[in-house]
Image 1 (cartoon, rainbow, N blue to C red):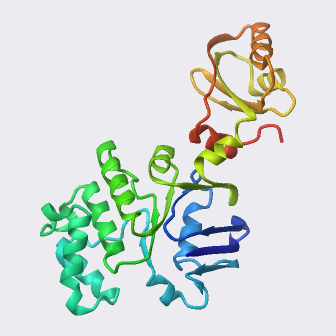
Image 2: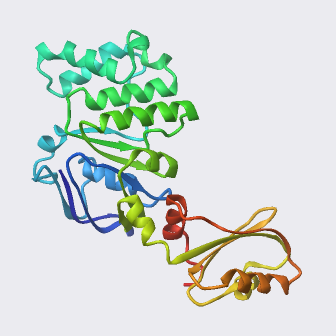
Image 3: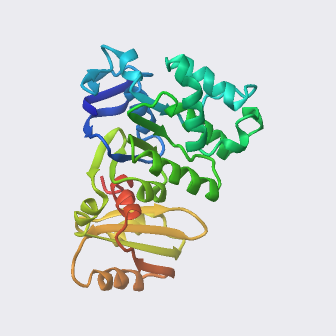
Length: 311
């Protein structure tokens, strides 16, 4: 359904997406994960034809986005991070307007509106102005917009951004329901959202794909890494802390705050906890927390996207 080959995007001299490759097959729900600024939205916008790649190719249903963007867009339902809704329009009228733009046959428009209103839970607000809707209902209206023409592929950029926990659950369940019938690519930096919704994850960092696969399979490959969280109070600077805790193969990230949070990732080794603790014991640090994290998608994400402080 979606094939990306050596996709690259520069903004001036800044490399936003660096020669990435992936395929998404029919029926998959795939999460595109990455920290803010990783290249997720740029990738999404190239897939949907809003941005032109600097290099590389994108194929949707074996059709080149570069060569035939109008045809490709007919296959796609797209929700950007901020849905471009018309606040002065009534929901029903807005969906009819979008249906016409998407070339839904005139005799099918009412049927499609009724379908998406029911599917997206808009029955109670269908005759309200969009500007009067809550954020959750606006997101639902955006989803209805995206599926009004019955596309084969849904591409959703941060679909739960700004929602409260109840609204997030509602939109998540709606996406899972839609995913039973469509191929879905979901961009997010919220790990719990992707873990609950997607069958596969692609993790992007600094414009590069750093992981791609089934979540459980990715975690299997993560089992040779231990990750420790240490919280201390100290006047020592970060260089001194890093030098003290440095070990072969270790990555060290230090977060500033009232307490310094130290995250150490390193290859598994017997009794490594004791080695680290002895290093700390010989200091005048006040130790508030020292624990080993369990394996999870969140920890994998942190490991793959944390800044390498050791070059």
